[in-house]
Length: 355
Image: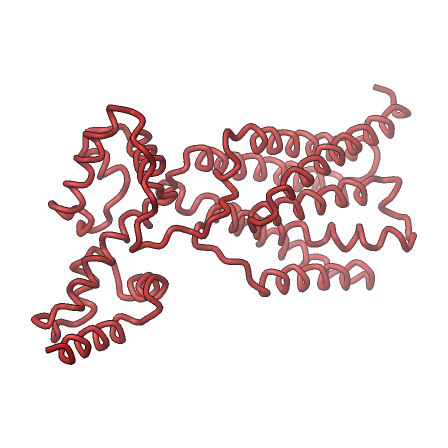
């Protein structure tokens, strides 16, 4: 390909990327009641700004109307992390801190760019890598406990696609000893971005149900079971019965480090069948929430028992299957709004009053 054709190729790739991202943002905003869909739409728009700003014909311009695009592109890694958290953490709740993280990222990046601070630029690049690393870590963390099969696969997409693109960018910048903006390298950057965006967009838009990633309902509480789905498959009824016997009669949830693999082995089922059973028939999106429902019910029964009034709370938590006091306290307060000590005191006081 001739050198003269490279700018046209670069412009076409970037134009296609921006078009795909705008379409994706519009589709995601249709489900804007979900934090994950909102952050996904903002991320798509921010990435579109980066595709425009990183173009060689635009990057060195100082037109005032490009300022909003420059600022939006600077917050891209922070939005990527927030999107990963909102997607993969079912207990996530939006907070003003999210906006604060994004604003700090943009403000720091703007200061480094507009005041031409070399050391600050390196720090900003390090900050961006931290956000990307946090997003990748969020995608990997808890994958084995994720019961939504489509979302489990998407975690791998996020990790692999993002890691490949970042490694390519780092190598190209090292080879060119500068930004990937000049000569034949800019179309390579544009092509990599187009492939990454197209790949992720196709994966998102091919979901059979939008609630796989963007549930509108509040996350399932640990101790209150969600509404079970009708058992349409005749083979599921005996499996559900066997699962309930293991959890309610044998109390396997008390086993240390109980995993979806260990439970599937006990039921002599493939892991994917057990994930689908718990997700589609019992309504849980995460294995931890499913198991913690039984653990918290067990612990609350012990805390209500006058005969166990002197048993330490740590002992009750460990007996119920929790690994330590911290996770138990957090899960307990999230479910009841009380600490275990307050719950025990109120329950025992109420029993004494009735007596």
